Amino acid sequence: MPVGVLFVCTGNICRSPTAEGVFRKLVDEAGLTKEITIDSAGTQSYHIGEPPDERSVEAAQARGYDMSGQAARRVLEQDFHKFDLVLAMDRDHLHHLNAMAPGDTYERVKLFLSYASQTSVQEVPDPYYGGGKGFEDVLDLVEDGGRGLIEAIQRDFL
Image (cartoon, rainbow, N blue to C red):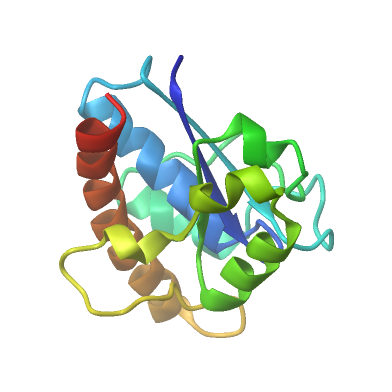
């Protein structure tokens, strides 16, 4: 069974789809595409069915990441059983996910940047209302967290 990873932000149009796109490439580069499944979702239903924010897509493409084919969706209760790791982009998402998680799945819910090793930042900031630098900052954090996450999956699951 592959290890399932779900990235979660608010509307699933900026942070979590960026994390999904970056992590897909990192997993591919590590030769682990058969061992790890990846998805993203939001805690809210504002953007269901919409593609990722154009600014996120452009920033990701500039670094060689592909976010095509993604569409926003909301976290579902069954996701807590389907995915081995449900990773929140910030503490608000973490709180929401913990409130939603069935009792036997609490240990699957974590803060994504707990896997980062190059930063002391613990939350991926929402770039939606800011400028282009915010999207670049998100990519920096997600790349760091993604590399650490691969190491943790190889150590703890594979």
